[in-house]
Amino acid sequence: MLVLVITLIMVIGYQEGEAIQCSQVNMYLAPCLAYLRGGGNPSPQCCGGLNSLKAAAPGTPDRQAACQCLKTVATQIPGISDDNAKQLPTKCGVNLGVPFSKSVDCNTIN
Image 1 (cartoon, helix red, strand yellow):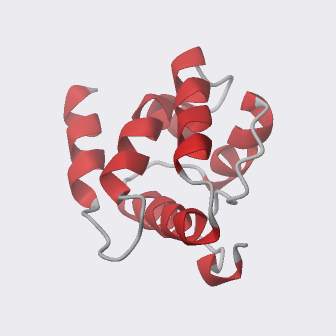
Image 2 (cartoon, one colour):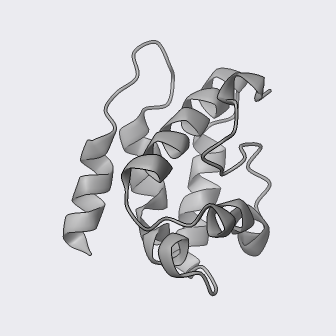
Image 3 (tube, one colour):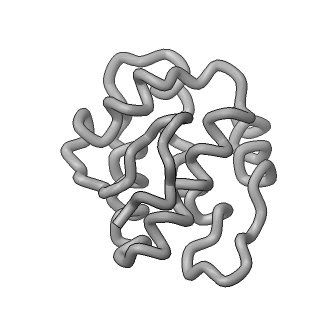
C-alpha cells in the first residue's frame, strides 16, 4: 500500500500557476485507493481526505486543477473504477464541486 501511495504522489507533479498542487490532491485521496479499486464503502480516512481536499480547493482555479489531477491519476493508476470514483463524494457526503471521472472536461468546472 505504501508503494501505491508513493506512486500516487509522484505520478503527478506541481502544476505551475495553480494554488493547489497535484501532490496535495494525491495525499488527500491516497486513503481512497482501496475504495477506488474495489468499491464497497470508503474508509473514514478516505472521507476525511475528501473533506480536506474540499477545504483546500475553494476557488474555481483550485477545483479545475484538482479535477485535472484526479483525471490524470485515474488514467495512470491501474485498476481505478470510474464508477467507484463517481460515487465517492456521495458515499462520503461531501459536495466537492469536482466530478470524479476520466472523461470530465475540467475547464467546465466553476
